[in-house]
Image (cartoon, rainbow, N blue to C red; front, side, top):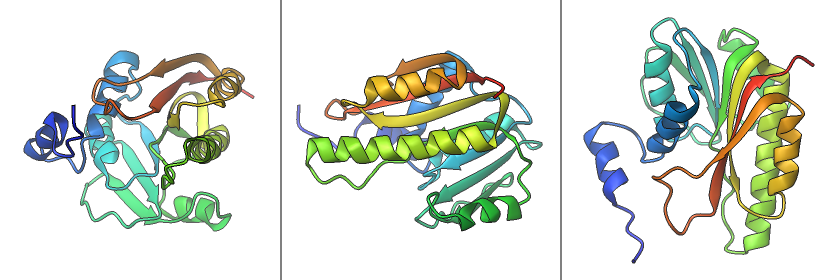
Length: 198
Protein backbone atom coordinates (compact mmCIF):
# COMPACT_ATOMS: atom_id res chain seq x y z
CA UNK A 1 0.00 0.00 0.00
CA UNK A 2 1.32 3.46 -0.88
CA UNK A 3 2.45 5.85 1.84
CA UNK A 4 -0.38 8.18 2.86
CA UNK A 5 0.70 11.17 4.99
CA UNK A 6 -2.95 11.91 5.71
CA UNK A 7 -3.99 8.49 6.93
CA UNK A 8 -6.61 7.48 9.50
CA UNK A 9 -4.54 8.61 12.49
CA UNK A 10 -3.63 11.92 10.87
CA UNK A 11 -7.30 12.66 10.24
CA UNK A 12 -8.27 11.49 13.72
CA UNK A 13 -5.68 13.78 15.30
CA UNK A 14 -7.10 16.73 13.37
CA UNK A 15 -10.63 15.85 14.47
CA UNK A 16 -9.59 15.49 18.13
CA UNK A 17 -7.47 18.68 18.01
CA UNK A 18 -4.09 17.08 18.63
CA UNK A 19 -0.94 18.57 17.12
CA UNK A 20 0.16 15.29 15.49
CA UNK A 21 -0.83 11.67 14.92
CA UNK A 22 2.01 10.54 17.20
CA UNK A 23 -0.29 11.15 20.17
CA UNK A 24 -1.89 7.74 19.59
CA UNK A 25 1.43 5.99 20.14
CA UNK A 26 1.72 7.50 23.60
CA UNK A 27 -1.95 6.82 24.25
CA UNK A 28 -1.49 3.12 23.52
CA UNK A 29 1.65 2.99 25.67
CA UNK A 30 -0.20 4.59 28.59
CA UNK A 31 -3.24 2.35 28.18
CA UNK A 32 -0.98 -0.70 28.35
CA UNK A 33 1.44 0.38 31.08
CA UNK A 34 -0.17 3.27 33.02
CA UNK A 35 2.70 5.70 32.61
CA UNK A 36 0.97 8.77 34.07
CA UNK A 37 -0.96 9.57 37.24
CA UNK A 38 -2.91 12.62 38.37
CA UNK A 39 -0.54 15.29 39.69
CA UNK A 40 2.58 13.94 37.96
CA UNK A 41 5.41 16.16 36.78
CA UNK A 42 6.59 15.23 33.28
CA UNK A 43 9.68 16.06 31.22
CA UNK A 44 8.92 15.72 27.49
CA UNK A 45 12.08 15.50 25.35
CA UNK A 46 11.77 16.17 21.64
CA UNK A 47 8.35 17.60 22.36
CA UNK A 48 7.59 19.32 19.02
CA UNK A 49 4.94 19.67 17.69
CA UNK A 50 3.42 19.02 21.12
CA UNK A 51 0.89 16.19 20.89
CA UNK A 52 2.62 14.11 23.57
CA UNK A 53 2.54 17.07 25.93
CA UNK A 54 -1.13 17.65 25.10
CA UNK A 55 -2.00 14.08 26.01
CA UNK A 56 0.17 13.99 29.13
CA UNK A 57 -1.28 17.30 30.32
CA UNK A 58 -4.78 15.86 30.18
CA UNK A 59 -3.79 12.82 32.23
CA UNK A 60 -1.82 14.59 34.95
CA UNK A 61 -4.59 17.15 35.47
CA UNK A 62 -4.46 20.77 36.55
CA UNK A 63 -2.15 20.01 39.48
CA UNK A 64 0.32 18.18 37.23
CA UNK A 65 3.05 19.91 35.25
CA UNK A 66 4.68 19.34 31.87
CA UNK A 67 7.91 20.83 30.59
CA UNK A 68 8.60 20.18 26.91
CA UNK A 69 12.06 20.60 25.37
CA UNK A 70 12.80 20.79 21.67
CA UNK A 71 15.07 22.47 19.15
CA UNK A 72 11.92 23.69 17.38
CA UNK A 73 9.63 26.27 19.02
CA UNK A 74 6.22 24.95 20.13
CA UNK A 75 3.33 27.39 19.89
CA UNK A 76 0.65 25.34 21.65
CA UNK A 77 -1.00 26.91 24.68
CA UNK A 78 -1.54 24.33 27.42
CA UNK A 79 -2.34 25.68 30.91
CA UNK A 80 -0.17 23.20 32.83
CA UNK A 81 2.66 22.96 30.27
CA UNK A 82 5.73 25.08 29.59
CA UNK A 83 7.87 24.75 26.46
CA UNK A 84 11.50 25.73 26.05
CA UNK A 85 13.70 25.84 22.96
CA UNK A 86 16.90 24.05 23.89
CA UNK A 87 19.30 21.27 22.94
CA UNK A 88 19.27 18.48 25.49
CA UNK A 89 22.98 17.94 24.74
CA UNK A 90 23.91 21.42 25.98
CA UNK A 91 24.90 21.95 29.62
CA UNK A 92 22.80 25.13 29.82
CA UNK A 93 19.59 23.18 29.14
CA UNK A 94 19.44 21.80 32.68
CA UNK A 95 19.27 25.32 34.07
CA UNK A 96 16.61 26.30 31.54
CA UNK A 97 14.50 23.38 32.75
CA UNK A 98 14.97 24.41 36.38
CA UNK A 99 14.07 28.00 35.50
CA UNK A 100 10.57 26.86 34.50
CA UNK A 101 9.92 25.95 38.13
CA UNK A 102 9.53 22.25 37.35
CA UNK A 103 9.64 20.20 40.53
CA UNK A 104 12.70 17.95 40.55
CA UNK A 105 12.90 14.97 40.50
CA UNK A 106 10.08 14.38 38.00
CA UNK A 107 7.61 11.51 37.91
CA UNK A 108 7.88 10.71 34.20
CA UNK A 109 10.38 11.30 31.39
CA UNK A 110 9.12 10.76 27.84
CA UNK A 111 11.14 11.07 24.64
CA UNK A 112 9.91 11.02 21.07
CA UNK A 113 13.25 12.38 19.88
CA UNK A 114 14.33 11.23 16.43
CA UNK A 115 17.25 12.19 14.20
CA UNK A 116 16.85 13.88 10.87
CA UNK A 117 16.94 10.83 8.67
CA UNK A 118 19.58 10.44 5.98
CA UNK A 119 18.14 7.40 4.22
CA UNK A 120 21.24 5.45 5.26
CA UNK A 121 19.80 2.82 7.57
CA UNK A 122 22.81 2.21 9.81
CA UNK A 123 23.46 5.94 10.20
CA UNK A 124 19.87 6.70 11.15
CA UNK A 125 19.82 3.81 13.64
CA UNK A 126 23.09 4.96 15.21
CA UNK A 127 21.82 8.52 15.62
CA UNK A 128 18.56 7.26 17.07
CA UNK A 129 20.50 5.20 19.62
CA UNK A 130 22.52 8.29 20.55
CA UNK A 131 19.30 10.22 21.25
CA UNK A 132 17.87 7.33 23.28
CA UNK A 133 21.04 7.24 25.34
CA UNK A 134 20.73 10.99 25.96
CA UNK A 135 17.10 10.54 27.03
CA UNK A 136 18.08 7.74 29.41
CA UNK A 137 20.86 9.89 30.85
CA UNK A 138 18.27 12.60 31.54
CA UNK A 139 16.01 10.05 33.19
CA UNK A 140 18.84 8.80 35.37
CA UNK A 141 19.50 12.37 36.47
CA UNK A 142 15.99 13.85 36.69
CA UNK A 143 13.59 10.94 37.30
CA UNK A 144 12.56 9.98 40.82
CA UNK A 145 12.85 6.40 42.13
CA UNK A 146 9.69 4.59 41.06
CA UNK A 147 9.24 6.91 38.07
CA UNK A 148 8.51 5.88 34.48
CA UNK A 149 10.36 6.40 31.20
CA UNK A 150 9.43 6.14 27.50
CA UNK A 151 11.83 6.52 24.55
CA UNK A 152 11.69 5.90 20.82
CA UNK A 153 14.42 3.90 19.09
CA UNK A 154 14.89 2.97 15.43
CA UNK A 155 15.25 -0.81 15.49
CA UNK A 156 18.77 -1.93 14.71
CA UNK A 157 21.97 -3.44 16.13
CA UNK A 158 21.78 -1.37 19.32
CA UNK A 159 18.38 -2.79 20.34
CA UNK A 160 19.70 -5.34 22.84
CA UNK A 161 22.32 -2.96 24.22
CA UNK A 162 19.73 -0.30 25.01
CA UNK A 163 17.39 -2.86 26.57
CA UNK A 164 20.18 -4.04 28.86
CA UNK A 165 20.99 -0.46 29.83
CA UNK A 166 17.35 0.09 30.77
CA UNK A 167 17.31 -3.08 32.84
CA UNK A 168 20.08 -1.61 34.98
CA UNK A 169 17.84 1.33 35.90
CA UNK A 170 14.25 0.03 35.92
CA UNK A 171 12.43 -2.78 37.65
CA UNK A 172 10.44 -3.60 34.50
CA UNK A 173 11.32 -3.00 30.84
CA UNK A 174 8.80 -3.36 28.02
CA UNK A 175 8.99 -2.85 24.26
CA UNK A 176 6.05 -1.86 22.09
CA UNK A 177 5.42 -1.12 18.44
CA UNK A 178 2.14 0.83 18.64
CA UNK A 179 -0.65 0.09 16.17
CA UNK A 180 -0.53 3.67 14.89
CA UNK A 181 3.13 3.29 13.80
CA UNK A 182 3.40 3.54 10.03
CA UNK A 183 4.13 0.18 8.38
CA UNK A 184 7.35 1.41 6.78
CA UNK A 185 8.68 2.79 10.07
CA UNK A 186 11.43 1.00 12.00
CA UNK A 187 10.62 2.74 15.28
CA UNK A 188 9.99 0.92 18.54
CA UNK A 189 9.24 2.29 21.98
CA UNK A 190 11.08 1.25 25.11
CA UNK A 191 9.18 1.63 28.36
CA UNK A 192 11.05 1.65 31.66
CA UNK A 193 8.73 1.21 34.64
CA UNK A 194 9.51 1.87 38.30
CA UNK A 195 12.99 3.37 38.28
CA UNK A 196 15.34 1.71 40.72
CA UNK A 197 17.07 3.63 43.49
CA UNK A 198 20.69 4.15 42.54
